[in-house]
Image 1: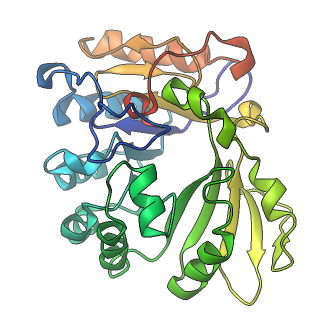
Image 2 (image 1 turned 135 degrees about the horizontal axis):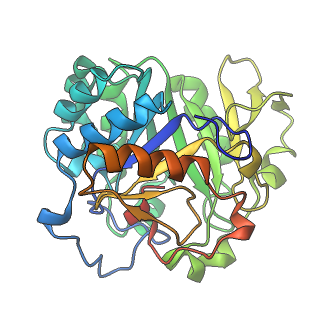
Length: 310
């Protein structure tokens, strides 16, 4: 469906849960979160119903997120349900990969097309620090298992000044040897991440200086791309803060508790958890058409990233 600015809104990000088995510094507080009650989390049947209506309005791509989506049971069942919706062309999932070793085969069999892996360090000690206790070995084993079933896996690394910006060589070697596509992401100071503004770093400041990377003219969605020397792998930079791509944003977000967020940064969200089919269709159509012009024009959300789904 085309919104009031002429943008084709065809991408839905679905947060399956606000819960996570890690506690990344910029995502949630050390004590964790005030968990949404189980009764307030959308059932798979309700997610299916909302997605089906959105597909009739032009949504073609779905990404499952969290929190950590794989802490929720039977995610492969939901993938299979979404796969049956007419109009849905691609289903992806973003995960920290620590639970992926047991899930990868079933996810592929259910119809999952692609995986993005959140991995903010390749150093075990740094990984444990940034995740507040995570085990890098679990994530790497999950990636290795997923490689048996998925051809193109993307690694998402939030680039943090003074923390992991000295690991670029390691990421590029990892990408080349494992045939993985790395995307360096600029920190978004939302929620608890506001306290970590000292980590803010534009990925282009680092990547443009590399002699082993050649910048490509055409972006891949929101990612600015680089060609990695002597490799078919591309490296990307995603700069949601310092570089606005609002004019071509094609996304909606469905939170785990049933709210549609037409903009990641915006406080505005609309509860669609209990609407009947007619109300749902009319409400979603209106949300899409009136999607905010840009992030500068909205009141900022108070939600944490694990609640929004990124």
